[in-house]
Amino acid sequence: MTAARILVVDDEPNIRDLLVTSLNFAGFQVRAVANGAQTISAVLEEEPDLIVLDVMLPDMNGFSVTKRLREAGYTAPILFLTAKDDTEDKITGLNVGGDDYVTKPFSLDEIVARIQAILRRTMQADEESVIRAGEITMDQDTHDVFVGDATIELSPTEFKLLRYLMLNPNRVLSKAQILDHVWEYDFNGDAGIVESYISYLRRKIDPHASEPLIQTKRGFGYMLKAGKSA
Image (cartoon, rainbow, N blue to C red; front, side, top):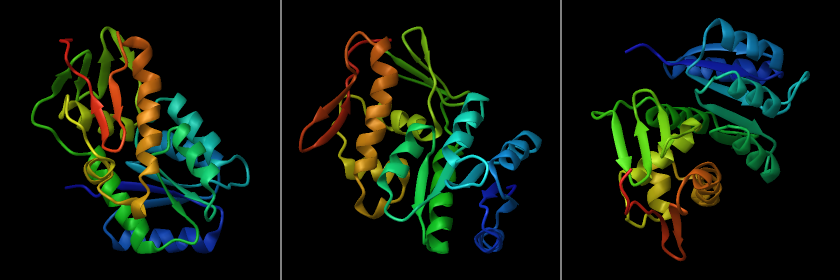
């Protein structure tokens, strides 16, 4: 199997070199750049399987870079490096299309674990291409998602979360179950990320559905209502 291609983006040479060395040792193909403009050029030259992207860059912040990449059609996952305990950065990063975040100072083992978990869930092959749950249709080969006839654009993590809900229709799934199956990493108990991504899915799905499809069962978790045929 070909090693996954990782693009590391950080303007601090010592952090950049440390990440490159550690990720190479973990078996990845790694390229490193120092700013947003170089990131966009690198993605155009050789689309990486994942980007490790520092939020604070000298020319444009990581959120702006991500927004431009997503608008250009780049769908591979992005792992943000954020300031320590900066919750606002984390939420903003997820809103613009990021898939995960690690706070500085970080553990190299944590970085590798996050990358491996993200790649497992985004590059996993599935036996059956098309799955349906109520009004939602998902093609796991092309990553196309439809609510009725409407096309829904999802980030890799949103896609993985919706897939898990669709494979368990009309079943209440706890936040712990969702973290385990979708993120494959416990985020140090940070179940708030589940709430955020459920909210993102609802904003994209509900306007095209006949009724709200993702229901909250307070104290228990979330359920995809799939009582109707697509």
